[in-house]
Length: 111
Image 1 (tube, helix red, strand yellow):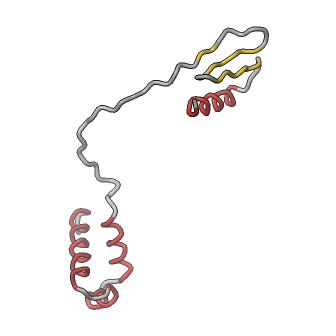
Image 2 (cartoon, rainbow, N blue to C red):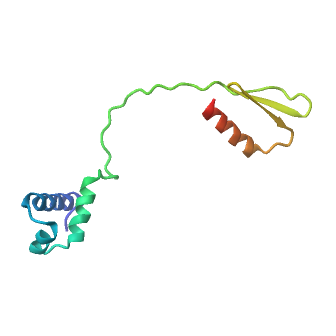
Image 3 (cartoon, rainbow, N blue to C red):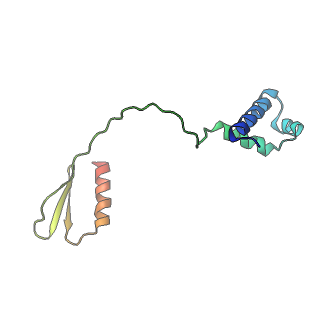
C-alpha cells in the first residue's frame, strides 16, 4: 500500500505524462486504462495546495493599532452614556446587554 506522499507522487507523474503526451485526456486515459474522472480529480487536487501540510514560516512582527478606548460615564438619572470615538449612545436602565454589545461592535468597526 502506498503512503499519501507516494500516491501523490505517482499521480503527479501520471498527470505530467498525460500533459506532455499531446494526446487528449480521454484518449490517454483509455490507453492507460484509467478513468478520466480519476485523472481529472488528481489534476485538480494537485493544482491546489494541500490544506493539511504545515509549512515552515519565519516569524515576523505585525503592527497593531489600538482603537480609541470606550468610555462609560456614570449614570445620570436612569440611563448611562457610552462614548465610542465621536459617537455617544445613551443606554437606559434594564437595557439588553446583547444588543448593546452588537451596537458597540458596529461602532468600533466604523469609528
